[in-house]
Length: 72
Image (tube, rainbow, N blue to C red):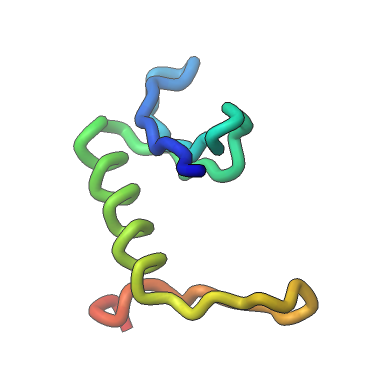
């Protein structure tokens, strides 16, 4: 089962991205960006970060994402 990432234009004219599960449920959303290109860059940054992130199998463990290594 896979979901889908999508970029959309919100009511105020800004662009956002969201992840929909295979059942259509929205499970994650991004912040507002003034251009579609900026929303796409942010979405790609999240994908890159998730690809190399630790995955917590224990819900009681908190996982704090501090951003890409290049931003430190």
